[in-house]
Length: 63
Image 1 (cartoon, helix red, strand yellow):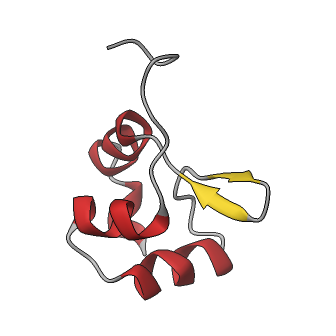
Image 2 (image 1 turned 90 degrees about the vertical axis):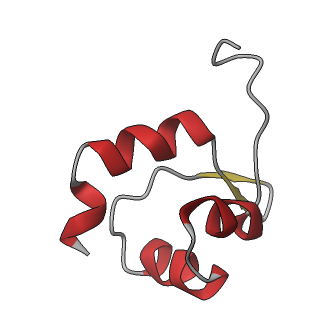
Image 3 (image 1 turned 135 degrees about the vertical axis):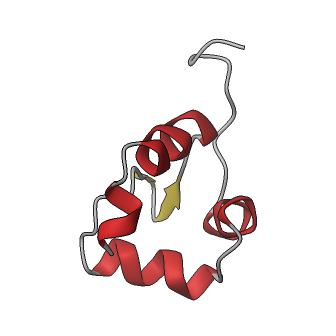
């Protein structure tokens, strides 16, 4: 699946994927911890491929 076909996921889905609580994701967003997120309307959305790159880069460990 290429990047254009990958679906956007919600905070709850991203939290489940990363095995953290949704509040943890919201905290990372609020504290600008570099989690790759895109605001679409009033909602934050994520792509799994971008989350994977972020975790593999080690940036998620700097939190």
